[in-house]
Amino acid sequence: MKHSILIFDSGVGGLSILSEIRQRFPRTHLHYLMDCAWFPYGIRDDDALQQRIVDLCRDSVDELQPVLLVLACNTASTLALEALRATLKIPVVGVVPAIKVAADQIPRTRIEDAAAAPEIGLLATPATVNRPYTERLIRDFAPHCIVNRLGSSDLVQLSEDWMSGRDIRPQLQAVLGGWLTGHPAMTQVVLGCTHFPLLRPLLEALWPQVQWIDSGQAVAAQSSRVYPGDPSAGDGSASLWWTPPVTPVNAHSDTQPAASPLRATTAHDAQCHWQGAEAYLRRLGPVHSARALSIPPGP
Ligand code: DGL
Image (cartoon, rainbow, N blue to C red; front, side, top):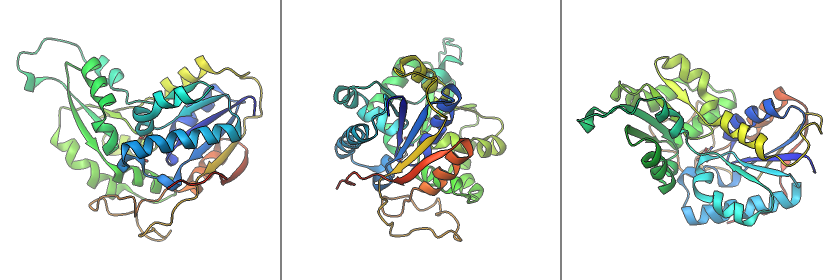
């Protein structure tokens, strides 16, 4: 489609970016693609994941013909953004943790005792917190801060479950409560995974002392700057696509509570919920189609 944007994530997380993009592109057709077959990205091998992202995005761009790709996933962007830009002929906008935004709010006063430096938090996937890309962001933009990192795929799964209407508050407490209590000076936390801004109402209610910072508005602004189509074309509709999910070993039924946060999320029991994404998109506007993409799911 000549005037459309493809927004891509492993699961529902990229909807936090899509909602910001919709504010700036009220008419443009938005394709939302979830890689349910490979969800969750945060515990995948880097080399295999990079190849997967490049292959899937190239095939999807060929099939759907968007004029802009938004890689609405920190785990994917910190790994595969350059490779994608080298492969595709359309502009690609990525999302990376808003460490600069958080660190810029903290005065760069000289502190003699390094242990007394101001603290910020980084909440992301296990992959993103350890990436060289993230190390560079911290070194370049937050040298005056202590950055406390928490990589959690449990939190990614909880976001999926929340978007499907499950009450996840006890599990959220269990995953984040101890970390936040252990760092009382940490008043700014970067949400470095696009799944996490979807939990903002819960995070703000449970921990009102914390400022939760994400990249959604910045990504939407950058998308406006580079969009090569006509932003006045379109009817404000969307399409939902997903790669067919592999049936998880311990799939949650609708009547069961979300997975215990005390058991680490693995590729075997993780499950992304395209139904939650469809319901969310329908609240934003008309949805033209919602179906599995006819692209091979990969190994
Ligand atoms: N939403 C993704 C991110 O921003 C990744 C979640 C996952 O699949 O692990 O990193």
